[in-house]
Structure formats: C-alpha cells, structure tokens
Image (tube, rainbow, N blue to C red; front, side, top):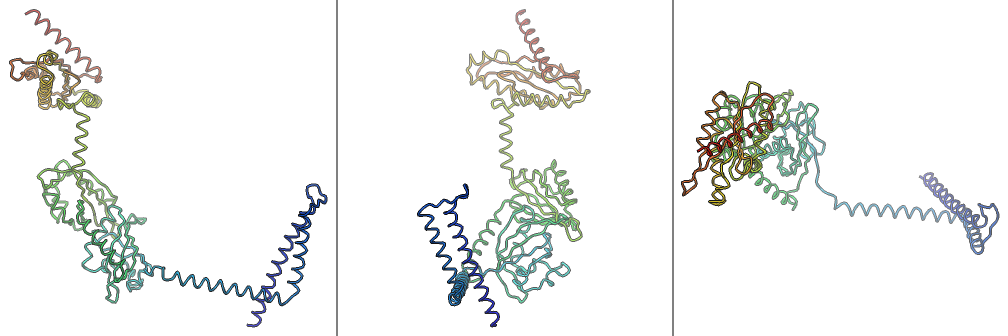
Length: 513
C-alpha cells in the first residue's frame, strides 16, 4: 500500500515537472522572438516588448527552480491534485444520483414470431424472458412455443386482427396487451409491432415490449388510447379475411355482412366460389387467378373487381391478398382485405365520360370516336369489314333561325338518341363530329352486301318532328365500307365525298321537281 502511494506521488511530481518545464520553454521561445528577427537573421530589440519578455522569462526560470527544488511545494501540489480528483469524483456521483430518478423505469424486450396462425416464437432477448418469467430454452426449444399463449384469452382476437393488418398492409401498430407470466401473474405491456421477411420470403412479426405499472398515469393513458384504437379499428370499412389453404376454409371479419349481400361458404371455398353469387361473373376468373398466384408464391397482389353489395347492385372493390408460409416453406395461409372503392370508381367513370362524351347529345365526342375507329382499323383482319356513316342534318340553320336555339338543341339531342340506338342495334358506336354533323361506325359487318338496306333503315329512322309543329327535319348520309390499307383519314374522306354526292343529288332532284 505504501509503495503504491509513493509511486502515485512520484507520478504526480513528474507531471508537475513536465508542466513547469513546458511553460518555461514556451515563455523562453516568446522572449527570443521578441529579441531576434528571424527573417533578417539579426537582433531586433524593440522596447518595451523585449524588456517585458526577458523579465517574464526570468520570472519563470525562478519559479521553476523554486518548485522543482522544494519538496514541500511538490507535496502541496500533489495534495491539490488529489483534492481536485476527489471533487471531480464527488461531482460525478452527485450527477449520477440526480439523474437516476429521471431514468425510465420501463423494461424493454424484443420478440419475433411467425405471422401465420400459430405465431411460433423464433427469437427473444433476455429482457423479454425476464419480463414474462420464462427461460430462453423454454420459449425457443423446438420452435413450438406459441406467442398467442402469452396473451390473455380475451385479447387474442384483437391480437390476431392486428397481426393481419401488420402482415397484409405493412402497418406499424402500437397497442396495449395483458400478458401472463410463467408464475400466473398478469402484466400490462405496450407493444410496437412491424413486419419483416426472411431470406425464404416468410413473414415474421417483430415486437418491442415495454412493461407498464398499473399504478401509473402512463398506464391509464395507454389503456385509453388502446380502447380508442380498438373502436377505430372496429369501424374500418375494410373487410379482413383469411383462407386456410390446406383445409380450404375461409374466415372473415364481421363487417362482411355490413357491406356485401351474399356470403361465400366458409368450407370448400375454391369449389363454391362460382356459385356464391357475390362476385360479378366477369370478374370470377380474375379472383381465381389472384388466389392461385398468391398460393403459388405468397407475393402480395391486388385487383379491382365487382362484388354484390347490400344495396342490391354490384360495387367496385379492391381485393388484396398475400400468402403466409408455414414451417415447411409452403403457403399455408392466404390473408387479405376487401376495400370498397365504388364511390371513387363512379367518380372516375363520371370524369371519363365527361372527357369522352359530347355533353348535349351524350354521344362520343370527335376525338374519342376517331380514336376508337383508329384502333379498330389498326387491329382488324383483312377479311373483316366495317361501315362508316357521316350524317349531316339538312337545313339545320333554319331550325335555329325559325324556332330558336332551344329547339335547335332539341333536334340535336333527338338526332343523338336515334343514331345511338341504330349503332347499338347493329354493333357499332356513334359520335358527334361537330355542329350538326355526326358519325356512325359499325364494326365487323357480317354481310356487307346488305349495306344499302342499312342505309335505308337509317334514313327511315332519321326523322325529327319539331314540337307543336308539323315541321319534320331529316339528314343526308354518306356511307362507305372499309377496305385493306384504310386509315381513319382516308375512310373519312371517302365517306365525306359520298355525303357530298348525296347532297348534290338531293338538290338536283328538288330542282327537277
């Protein structure tokens, strides 16, 4: 003990010598710099700076001599060092003690478990084990311990629903649960859950757990938040469902009955999918392929389909599915959600119609009908033929001048109604080119030899009587059949030429009479 103290004193004296010598050297260099000009290598004594430098340097030499030769001074300095060290240690201890009450008293644990129905625990840290009173060996042995068994029975349904949301939608959820410790005690914990995937694309839920004291305000606040979140989750519009692939069974959330009119059988799902009357006939193949693809690789997918709603009509919904692998690596479970997007789809459809349709006649506008015909001409076979009709209302300016623009609009609306019915009857579409000029295009006319009879039928239909008047208005029509190499422009020019010839012949006949 004595030798140790003596060595410590020697080290402190050595430190004191180094400090004094260093300061003396620094002051000496400063004094030389004041006395000598190093640029011109000559003495350059400037008063009074040089004199002050020499005096300070001499003072430091004297202090060095006194300190290093006097043992009592060295001992006093050593004692000063020791007192400083004690003061620093006391300050550190007091700082730690003052900070200790502010340190969080919450213990945090980490646990990972499978997203599939069994929720087998795959990893946990020591803090989590200490929190619930189990050893790591007990939790991880043979990968058979189910995480849900640690949650009280009343909260397991909530746990299952939240795991579905985390796994399916990638959400990060914070919630409050009550867990059973190994000794039977129940503890309250907050858990932050998120999803992760391993190298085999299997989904795992990773949770961070913080134990709460039931006597703290924090616990009460968390309990209120948990209850509020539970209410919000119960009011979500999304329908959550789960398919057991091996048993071919289906379970779904209660809001299925609130949204959809028909029920899919919960057993033998794949066999009864087409008989359930809940999926639009045109969309059944889409859903079957969605299910088949998810069952094959487990990758998350979504499709927009129509399901039969409570209001007695099909509604647009987005169905999302993803597969969950079991222990042997195969897809054992399909989890999914159904989101009602009917309102959004109707709004999009309305905007689409506004962009494509003529507001007055409700026929396609010029751009839309032209694009549709271009698509047909580009993809049609040489053996296929279509018919183009260009219609121009006769003496339409007279309608506006005689009866007013309101009646003129009525004539155009009636014209649109007649042309639309004719086009639908014969497998085509109609559009308004502009003003009083219209266009009809019939796709894949089976017997082009009967085109003249179609022309006469259209002439016969195209008669519009002015309300409260005997005046009847009709139109002139130019018709042309498609041929190989036709473009929209070339076809339109031929039909327009036929219209011109028709008007010319009509005028000649009127003049002859």
